[in-house]
Image (cartoon, rainbow, N blue to C red; front, top):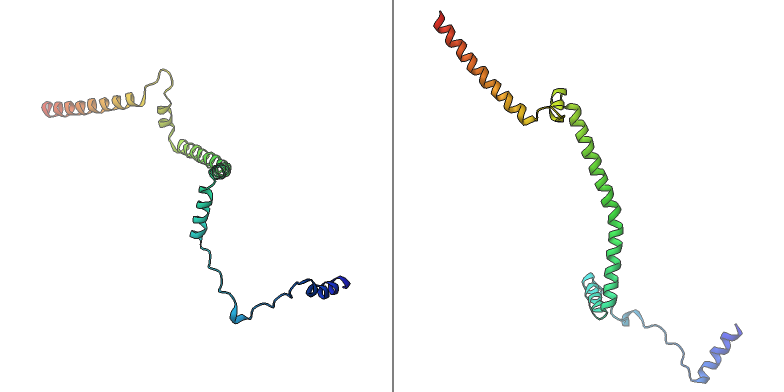
Length: 142
């Protein structure tokens, strides 16, 4: 208290002026121009253009951060995708009939699916010829 009154009484003697009261509301200075995101971006670009090392350092840090953030997510998505793929395959195998499953296994000594298909086609053709011959014999014999 003593110090503040001493300063107030000695200040005019030392040449200091009293603090001026704030200007009335009518004389208030115009509001500062509003800073837009574009203005911020332009300023940052100019600022970083003058400092290439800082720009490179910030770019490197941003790259490291985004990679660290993305990598676990990428691995999780990959794991999820593989798990889903495995489930789909298991479901298809369960739905597949036993004959079809054994046809696709290609154990040593077994025919490939393509060979089985060609043999089936040949059997169909032979059966058709046999049916034609039978019908021809029936017609002639009676």
